[in-house]
Image 1 (cartoon, rainbow, N blue to C red):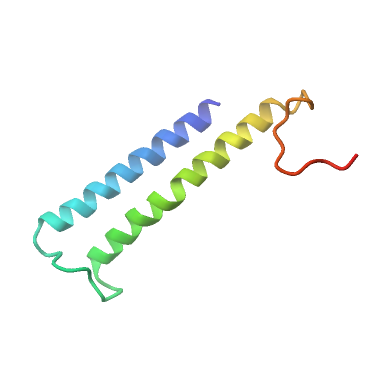
Image 2: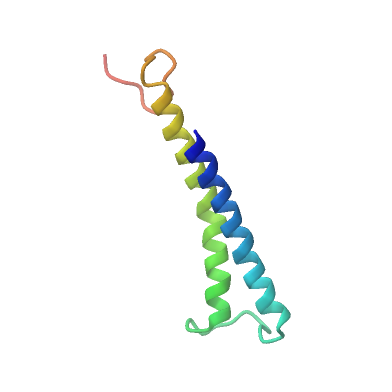
Length: 87
């Protein structure tokens, strides 16, 4: 479970750092409107932050689910299942 907590903390830190990076880009005055050029560094900052905000929560859920499943694998009655096993 420690690994899941550490991974969650690192993903939170990554999201915070990427958010600060976007804010720094906006604060520099070079941002302006939403950029249309895919090679624009500010657009890359925005997309990196948005992708982290979108995928980090699902990664955390998957990590905790795998840890819970690992710990409960010895007791089949309490194992979490998304799909019931065939009998």
